[in-house]
Amino acid sequence: MPTEPTQPRLSLDTQAARNLATTLKTRPQMQAISTRWLLRMLPWVDVRGGTYRVNRRLTHRVGRGRVGVAQGGADDVRIVPETLTEIPALRGFGDAGVLTAIAGTFAARDYRPGEIVVRAGDPVTETCVIAHGRLERVATGKYGNDQFLGVIADGDQFGDEVLTQEDPRWPCTYRATTACTVLASPREEFRRISAGSPALREHVGRYLDSLREPVNRRGEAAVSLAAGHTGEPVIGGTFVDYDLRPREYELSVAQTILRVHTRVADLYNDPMNQIQEQLRLTIHELREREEWELINNREFGLLHNTDYDQRVYTWSGPPTPDDLDDLISMRRKTRLLLAHPKAIAAFFRECNKRGLVVGSTDVDGHEVPAWRGIPIFPCGKIPISGERTTSILALRTGEDDQGVVGLHQTGLPEEYEPGLNVRFMDINPQAVMSYLVSAYYSVAVLVPDAIGILEDVDIAAPRS
Image 1 (cartoon, one colour):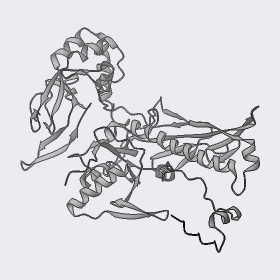
Image 2: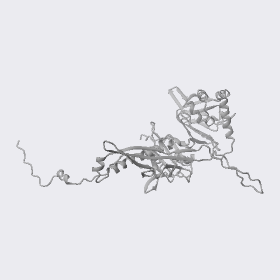
Image 3: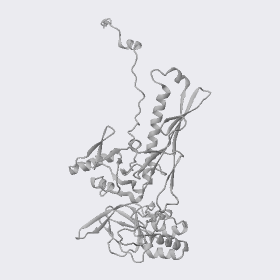
């Protein structure tokens, strides 16, 4: 069939015209850039010597940690012996053989939801460690009503009074809220092991002596004062004792070597400087890693360095207004809440169920959700476990308020940003320039109640 004649073009084609046009370009974009609220909201302390020492008053009260549990199978649940030192009476005890013997006395018991584990007023005859599950602590109020005192879960222990007291009684009832596995060690077994170990008896004796030291409500060595007296009594002297082994924080570092070919830097710098754009994206990546380390680093990260006494569990799983109230009330001047965006969404769902409207506050020109006037900042670097649970952090910040502070050093050689420097290294035989980019940082908790964590926050959305 004959083809129809094509119409002659009446104007220049756009594809050809582009050869003479200047293309408008964006700067290189990066999906991984986040708001990094933690870095923005922390007060930063200039650590001139590279080490930050946190001096505190001497503390006599020994904190309570969490005992480790290993599972070799469905019916093989056992205590990790070294972690028994998280029980206050055994804190600092170093005889591995004795700890192994004590760990061997724990036997597993299973409980169904709603089942009573121990009852208030009964004699305490054993030390218990939760291997898996959640228990609620319940007491009887003045008028016979149940008073819920809190929730404990994996690794928490109770009943260690049998190690130091003659005839203790359970102060409250422990009731399973989920299916639970509890490991229990009879008092007689501990006494048998103690009878054969002079080192253990001496260690427990020192612990009992420390309990007799006068302390304030925070467990710090008491300062003797006289108040409300009349006449001319003799006023005693006193002094404030200090911790002889204060914690020191050394600045950590995140580094990388940025490489740029000299041909690229020489010929392709218009309209954007290639080295500057490479540096900008590299620094963003370093700052993202810095925030991740401040939260997750096992040595100084906030999730791993929060005192166990400052950790609470949700009452039912999802983060409710009651849970956040519990978390906030544990400290004075809570400045900010830090949560994974999915945890914030879960909190909003709980507020919607109750018909509550979450407030907001202005932070540096940004409208941020707030609860009780405290801003809730999103942080995607807080991990989510395989069970779809996460944590919410509450922080008091600043040196003046004995809070949480960020640590860095300014005035570094060839400093590019506070706490970050870029140092030229060399040009190799392939004409590639190298720059060492380093960020120095850490974070310190000045007193234990400066930070608290709401743990095991269930963020799974319910099916409608």
